[in-house]
Amino acid sequence: MATLGKTSKLQAVNQMLSFIGEAPVNSLEDAGGVGDVSLAERTLDEVTVEVLSQGWHFNTNYDVVHTPDSNKQIVLSDTVLRIDTKVGVYGNMDVSLRGNKLYNRADNSYEFDESEIKTTEVMSLPWEDLPEAARRYITLRSARLFQDRAVGAEDLREVGMREELSALATLREYDSEASDYSVFDGTLPLKTISDYRRTTAW
View 1 (spheres, rainbow, N blue to C red):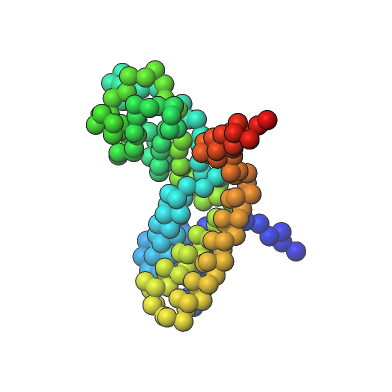
View 2: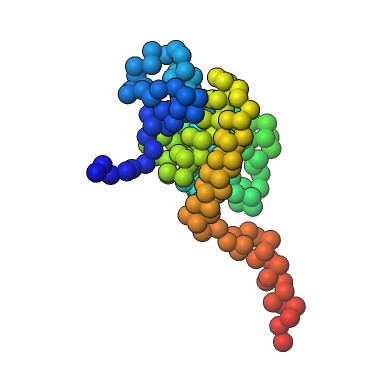
């Protein structure tokens, strides 16, 4: 008996095709860039970027160090979807991603005088690096959108929506468990508790 593994990109596309009653394919390379297979793959890629752009524990990097180049600019990889700096650490900055460069909205400039800057970055990842919970949600969301574009059947849309929402809940649960989020991660809860202890101490 074959061992079941994570959903491959080919399996995801074939699941999307089966959602509209199309036969599966043996290879994405044989699609020829046209037809339902090509539309399914493009939809899958589109939704993958959309979902990853939201920022999850598995595709967020913290304290990424950047050094400005000779023009005092910071050029970023095309895989960076969102970027920010920690509030309070860089009080003179309000950074954003413009093109593939870091932009400081505080002084309307691409130039940075700091020797290095640490950022938090949401990254695009290849399909093979995604956890199964993310693959499942992306596949089901893609299947629903693909069905809307290729067929537009209302009954299939409702079925797809229910499965999509269930997969989203699973993904959020997975991400929450993996990230070990705590109420104490924020500065406001810590300050509130600290103030409470001071005012109630004997």
